[in-house]
Image (tube, rainbow, N blue to C red; front, top):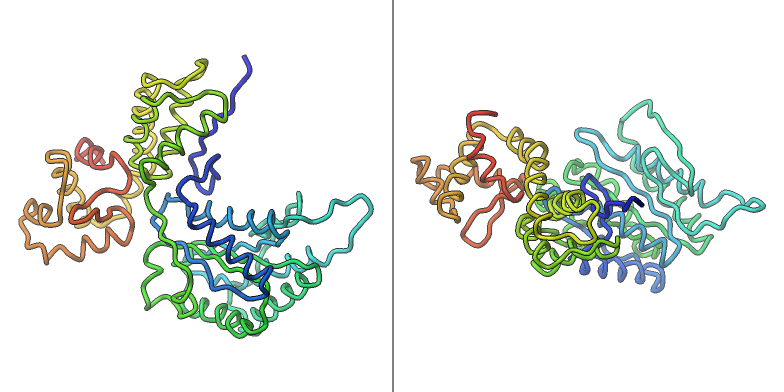
Amino acid sequence: MTRQTNPYRPGFAQHPVLLAGRGTVIAGASEALDVAALDGRMPRPLILVGVRGVGKTVALNEISSLAAAEHSWVGVHVEVKPRTTFLPELVERLADAERLLTQPPTAGRMQLTEARVRAGAFGVGGEAGFTRASASRPPADAVEGALAATTSAAIERTSGLVLTLDEVHLATREDLAALTAALQRHVPDGWPIVVAVAGLPSLRDPRSSVTYLERGEWHELGLLGPTDTLEALAQPASLAGRPMDSAAADLLAAASGGYPYAIQVVGHHAWRASSGSSTITAAHARRAMTAAQADLAGGLYAGRWHDTSSKQRDYMAAMAAQLVEEGIVTHADVARRLGKAPAALSYLRARLLAKGTIFSDGPSLRFLVPGMAAWITETDGHR
């Protein structure tokens, strides 16, 4: 029997077959690229914010791919690391891009139509590893010089540069200021550069951000709506030759809660459960939901639980108990269960919201990852 590749891709930065519900982001990126490439102006940056698992990194990758496909632009990508300046890596990636742009053509070599420079990889079909002797912050003029040299090389090839930064909430204000000051100084020059950054919602905190980002084009990435969720589940199966019937799609959509990562997990297990069948049915979906629940429990549920303080866990446990018993929970409900005044627990709610463990749905509270309330109540005392 010919193997059919599973079209669902759970995992970090795994590009889904269908990028559902992100049309506004891609449209904004396409317009920014047109402004830079055709109008000769440096557009304001694109800022993508959202909790983990909603597809921020995938969206950044899509922006780079769009730039390559529509304008043959080079992409430079850096992921910010905790407690580490990202500027040395950025300068290196820019130097790699400059070398890639200025390399002389050789007989039989394919014309450069896409290049994406990342930590550990650059070029078309080539890879390279780098080590850094020091992680000290380079002088500001080194950052500006690297940007200028790479941009000049791109202009000579009638090309441009897409600079994508991930996990920007981890960057220091000093690093962001050094980069954005260099970019701001050259706005009048019309550099062909599009900047797109992604981070957690804490990036909105003015104490850690910079003016250049505050004036950018902000996109909040969250849960998918019902229509986009169904499309994200059904279309990959159809394209892969094993369509999903509507009953199965409805069951899996409800189980995923519209959370993009969970959509890929439930779809992945539904494909497994339906191996050897021509269609994914409701029976397959039910088996998949059990497997998906175990998958999420071993990763996301446990990870988010252990990433909290004991007091935050008390808040989550009270919230989960209320949700399981009543189907809805408010901050006042949690306070009542814990025997505290709501104001005394506001800081716990705020911290859990900032982490993306829970979110507000009007006056109600919900766990971001579907099924987490049941997991907390069912496993209490066994963690």
